[in-house]
Amino acid sequence: MTSQLVITGFEPFPGVAENPTEMLVRSLEACGDPVLQGAEAVIVPTRYGDAPAALRAVLSRPPRVLIMTGYSARAAGLVLESRASNACTATLPDAGGAAPPDSADPLHHLPARCDIGELCAAVERAGLACAPSDDAGGYVCNHLYYHALAALDEAGAETRALFVHIPALTGSALAETSAAALDLRDLQRGLGVLARELLR
Image 1 (spheres, helix red, strand yellow):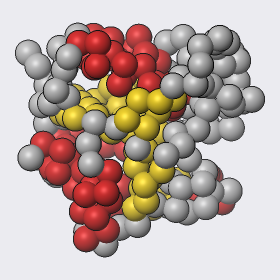
Image 2 (image 1 turned 60 degrees about the horizontal axis):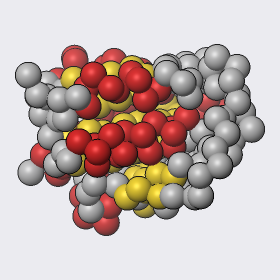
Image 3 (image 1 turned 90 degrees about the vertical axis):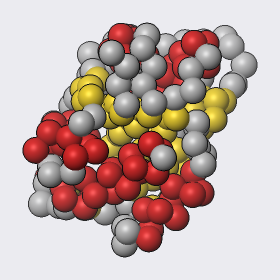
């Protein structure tokens, strides 16, 4: 059966022993929001070779909406990524110790499958900080985003897809070295706003 809504988070990776996106996604089942509670939750390995494969089964039956989440120490609120690239430039190894894959392909971008401006405005109306971004980074987040968008394009799917970078969780060890932190309830609320807008 095709899912209405799929939401992904990442496992830990070097320097991030507890990934806030994994905690966020695992909290949805009991969050009290019926839209988020009905989502298919997918926790993705933070490894270049495994991250796209973790979504392969989901994308073989494209959902109506796909929201991918990743942690960013620079995020001051929810950061909505307007595009992904085929370039992996990060020097940080993935959770398996692997470096970014080499590619001789020219730089190529794929756009988000939604209106970033409208979504940012909706989140801000809910009283939460939100900003657009045109650089999803060079780490596994961007790698997954690009491969997910490419797979949806190849399938001719109408799925609305977005990648969201989130800050640290309030009170966590990451909050001490991150640009900002949000309560779990606020992160759930922001995710709920995005999900409802994308499902409209």
